[in-house]
Image 1 (tube, rainbow, N blue to C red):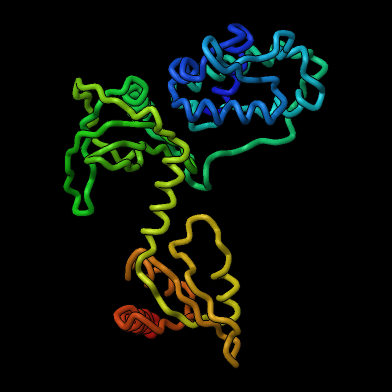
Image 2: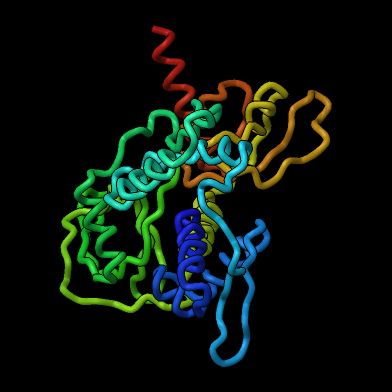
Length: 318
């Protein structure tokens, strides 16, 4: 975690007084570019860090800097108590280690400053409290940390599986799910760890590029996923009531708004274009809007909507 890394940088600088960015990167298992970004963050937030250039130079912190628990203000203590290990991270041994470290830090605070925090962050989405089996997650995470290649099986839509050898670059927790970022056939990809089957170590090691940054790579993969997922364009007319529902960009909606024609027509209905994954996803969702939506195109979806509406009508006319 980045917060853990920032704390580690400060503690290392307090102990060693001077260290090169390259050595910090090696010690913390990240790229030099990531270390430079972390140093900027620390400097902006008031840590007296500076650089000495030339032979024998490095990253330094002023000699009389005192960054211990005793220097915390009341406001900082209040903010500090919000810190909790995110639920997904407790599945990993490193999360349990961080939890013990936090407990030790809390125990150093004066009792009069400790109270129940007023803010709690729940990292799980509604109905998504399930977690990846600890053994599978720990196995994947260990492979990531030790740069060990894996052989895994992925499920296919037809219930078949295909096997691949991959280089695991990092793990990410998002909305109650764990994902693996990995390299395969020269491309960085992502996959839910819960989808992985028959995970085995190949006995091979791999080199993760020094310039690789997990956070920026993950954000790019998410953007690619979001933009490539909704490739089935649907032209619709919607009533004023459904238009208000349509605009609510809540988590989990199966479509992306690509166009809204303004203003509405004389009847108050609006013309919109939505992107869905495919015809089935579009039909399943749009049928739920009843007579508040009319599919204009594609014609295949319009015909399928009519067919399903007629089937529903027959059921309720019995």
